[in-house]
Length: 85
Image (cartoon, rainbow, N blue to C red; front, side, top):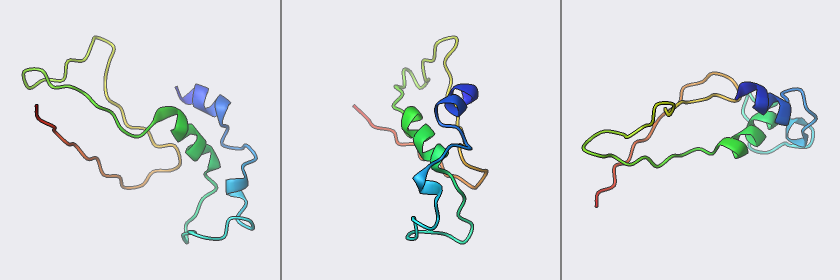
């Protein structure tokens, strides 16, 4: 997956988002050139709906949940919401 994302949206690509002389609002002190991460995110999404069956998530043999960081390590939060019938 990492190789595919790097081929589609290379970290060293030329992204206007990375031009800090153009993008001057909503900037943080530790802002990084992360245009590639925003584009890679569009291919992955940010949420998932998984049914519970008898209190278990019915994954197949090759299915799992994974978290991926596309920019650089930082603290993250995970939200779990259970919706009833």
